[in-house]
Image 1: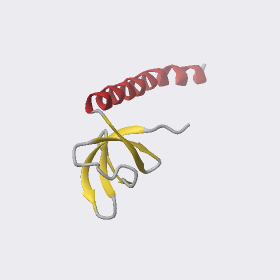
Image 2: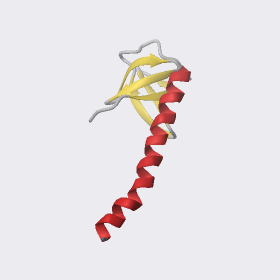
Image 3: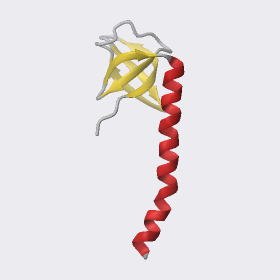
Length: 86
């Protein structure tokens, strides 16, 4: 499954490249498809490309949902391990 994730642009680089922050992870991506992206804009990242801008509030809501999903998955992990033992 492929997901597009919101990320904040933290640095613009030459040749329509940028560094984005994905929840503390920084990654270089192409901004060829969003050539007006600026530092502090939120963009949607898919397979190394910014494919569009996103409203900062919508980006924060989406990131919060991903954090909830991660916490829920981590909470289930001990139960799954227990089932394997039994």
